[in-house]
Length: 144
Image 1: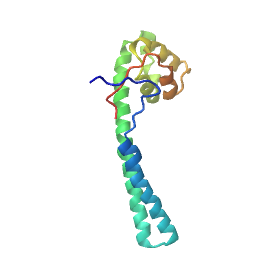
Image 2: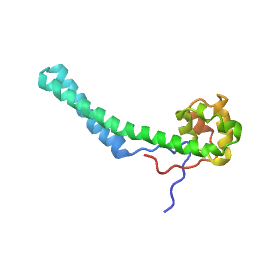
Image 3: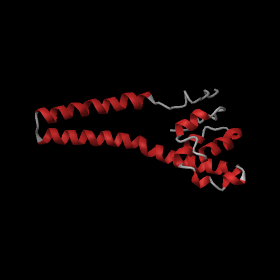
């Protein structure tokens, strides 16, 4: 089965069961527990609210930590790929931030040099602007 194509407009990965359902199932009770703690304050209501906030934070970090690891892996992969750049750019790889490198991961090999130059010249400031500048999109179907 062929994988779907990606572009700047369609590359964001949303997992409806996590992003919409699970987060709603955690957020709605937390709001209710906050309401109960404010309107009918008791130690039990306060502890329930604290617990609900803790669960909400755990769910947030369960998503944030793997994304951080993914960014580190992308940085490593792209720095290896950038070793094929001309000498003048290869010597400046350390000047490219992780945020920029993550944006460059969708860049095809034939336009990598040009976009790296634009990043180093300050023309492309963040990962969104880099991804918007990519003409020949290199899909990433294995991201989290």
